[in-house]
Length: 360
Image (cartoon, rainbow, N blue to C red; front, side, top):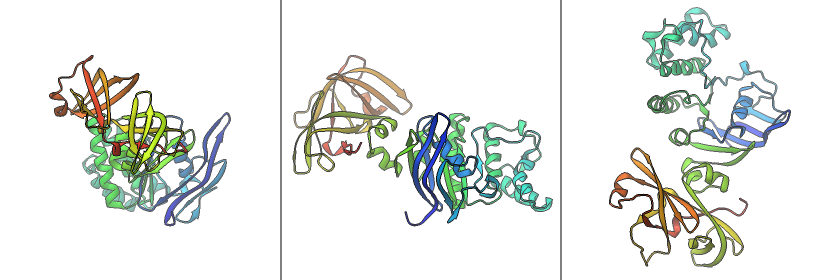
């Protein structure tokens, strides 16, 4: 990426007995919203702390705006962080919390108060400026933390799972607020989260990590539909992965023999021979009460369970020794009268399968 604003080059971080980040390379454009995702211990929060200057890397380089950051202390980097715990000062009231970074920059009291009140007004909190932090709700404290981070007008905002302590309703509201702020300010947001829904709703690009390495980087829809390897496919959730032996190619399609049967797949990344795996997303599978002889990819199974997720349901089906997950809207399932033990037929279009690249 030639127009990178923030660059990580061979960034490595080792602790005694733990290799947290393993020589990663990442370029981030100015104004981009990046979501760092991955399981606990994958290195995403360590990467954020390295960018913030709270840790010094074992090796590798960090640059922001073309300026090397190695050895530059956190308070000189203009990379404020919004923490999961918020880290607001209980001995300061709301406006004093927002003023605090400006005090560290030696701004006078009148200018500090003016800027702090501007941001409190922007966050809808100006009427609460003199309140103690303990008098605020979780969502209000979250907005104070964001105002405090942005009052210095930084070029980069770092967010470490900032919504994880909020209830579901507040998380959705704060997602909307963060998206609005990002669009209005046009600065770079780097956001660490476990929640796929947050990353998909907010990010321009997802960077998925595991064991200190970047497994895939791309638009949310690309990472979801075209995972780079089995780890990504499994982490993204509602994916079904089948592995077998390549049974041939013809035109735009090929076939893979699996324990669950032979299935047609796109020929694009299918190897000429040998073992191969493909992914079929849970929302790409159709459920039927009767077999369809005119469909290439079809398998008979029995319902083993149904999970309710509001407007959608996930149906678990055992078929030829494999467990499939099928995700559908409630109205799509009403006519099937599903129940555990019921026989069903699963079908999908060959072009909806994604053959995992051979380096996976």
